[in-house]
Image (cartoon, rainbow, N blue to C red; front, side, top):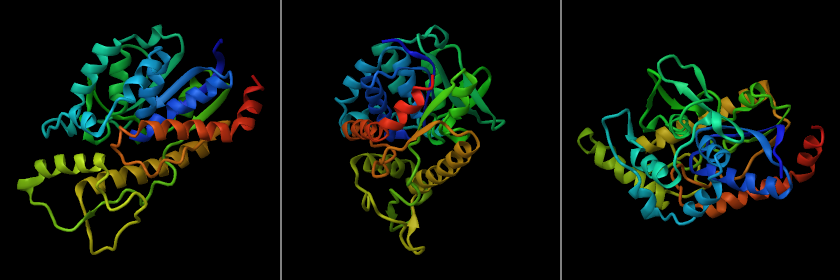
Length: 303
């Protein structure tokens, strides 16, 4: 099966919800649709880059072995590098297990979006180490430490372009299918913080909060914002602010540069760091493709 040279797939940011991209790719392949251009922000860069390099089968097989405990083991907690997780342990594992590739050598045209922390500019990563580009693209502010690349500090691409339709167009896509993971998120996954934290306990409390988030020890997946009298915790503020920001930016960018098809998996019940919930995310990715099957076939037929 040959890749459609002028068909682009824009994979959006979304942390643990990003595993839905695997289901989207699988379902499109089952339909005989193989995008020749693949671009991603954050989690979308991870899945899209892995697929473009030919590692997706092995990557998904490994993901399905993850448990809460294994996910926690990959979180190397730090307070020294501009985030609470360095990500070094995870990406060292990736390199050892899957190897690395130069982006320009990939059989599928690939690009990742990152944000220059110093200038605020959107950066398109189109050459060099694949895993370095992915690592830069998914450096979620406050969670993962920023990455120093080419003399600049890079953070998450979702800050500036959560669903990189524009990058797909710039790389030659005439038809773009976009996957938006940021809908219906505002007000979700808000954890109740009944007591304030002292600075003395901050590092320990952050580590506990991250582990509790992964374990699902929250006030409820569908909980709305509590009353103003309940003080939000630091993790609540970070995740809630990111949800608001990415939702608003996604709406603006898609309105200004609309894709031909927007797929919106319903995964608002997944927590930010619940990376072990692979199966339900993948299945939801498949489901939303099947739901839009006729529309997808119609736009792809124009190529």
